[in-house]
Image (cartoon, rainbow, N blue to C red; front, side, top):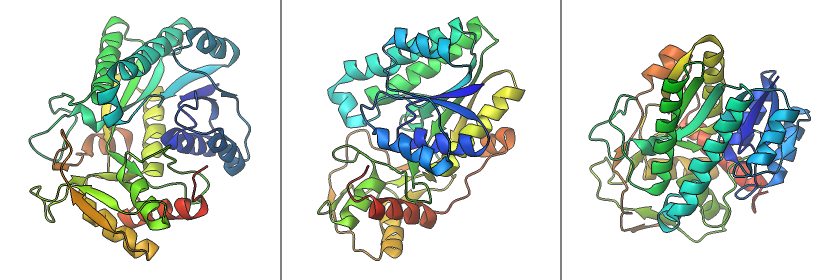
Length: 335
């Protein structure tokens, strides 16, 4: 009886694989390796001392997906697979809609065929658009300002409609805030291909000398130091939230949405300063124009996850920086 992890070679998927194996679950990993490396799968096996099936397939290949369900005894799915670069989604919207939405539709069709109806879906805080207050709770109105966010929102709506049509499905929708950090061993971590889209890997690459300086997008927000404030969560805390959501599905019927964050906002410069303290490196930065669609302050109300899942984030911003730095130092060029 296995948990299928789609996108299981990626940053969050690989950490989920480690924690699931640690907790005694059996897993099957699927990834098309378009934005990840097989080395992360090898290192998950190394860290856990456990072998598991890996399939290099794309969710758009429904025939190969069907064969996995035919071959493996899958009981639930953690769905991480998807393209996730906001800027790229604006340039290539059709690619994002086809990959993220069609891929998910294929997955649901095959799950339905094999009567596998427990699903944990990786959504995003981008579905809140530009909220007019913080902290952000699950009941806030939803909107999206870019194609990436719209694919997440569309998939959420598809899952809601699916449940209305067949209430034997058990679905957890998890809206992430800003995952950072790495496994404490330094063996797996965030491995962006090309220029990082996220703040932490950009900082670590500047610290290690791979990039000259950090670009800070705007310093005139209505925040303590003028830079944007976000809710950064350690990736290990995040995936422990997924396992809690999986356990919740085993005990509870229905479809539920949960925020996964710390409930605390940190500015860009808070992150830079904590990282400098950990790494003992200078992080030169240059303030540039704000990006279209960026918002000033965004952090989670985590009360629902605490109450229903019995989960809350535990790791501090300093620990997030320490683990990110250890990963970067031990893997200066990534995998």
